Length: 231
Image 1 (cartoon, rainbow, N blue to C red):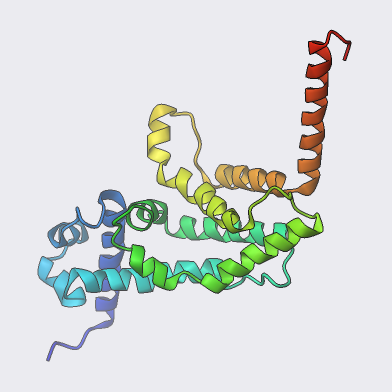
Image 2: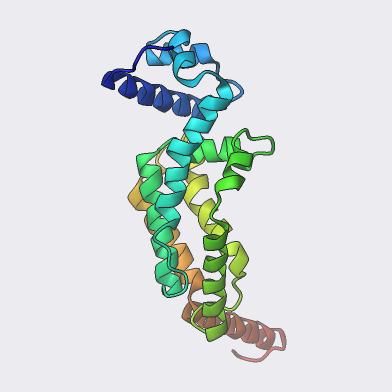
């Protein structure tokens, strides 16, 4: 029978988990060894095995203790039956940024281990996606499109994919773009303002009508010029 853990052991375990997830996000799970986790944590490999026994149990702990909480923080407050679609979408965006601010490793881990084919967290993610909440979000957007509140050209089932990509991809690839353009800013305020502007303007039925009217006007002017008539 193992020794009874002291309170500080729980801090050590949490530290190991934090170090492991940061390394996984940076290098990928398959490219990270227990020895590397131990060295970065300042402990022995035996201590990592003491707490997590196997790599699979370490991944289980990571998912259950980190990512399930992230899913809940984003989706638990959603009331897709009553929420205004624009407010609902902005709320999801805000909570996603709240989560990535608290877990800055998440966008890279999401890209490496959930989105990529063969990612070692993909099946765990599928098992925990709140499918009913995501479906209800799509239905909320569909009602907004049908009522004329939202841009009728939106595809409701694709909107959350767009939200996810807009929030996560710039953060996951920030180092690449900052190498190409060192003056580029990827702070939360800039990204959140950008994402909200894209979504609210693109989702708005009023914006869609104005854009369509401008497009028709330009097309008419072009046609008249082609016929030699003043616009």
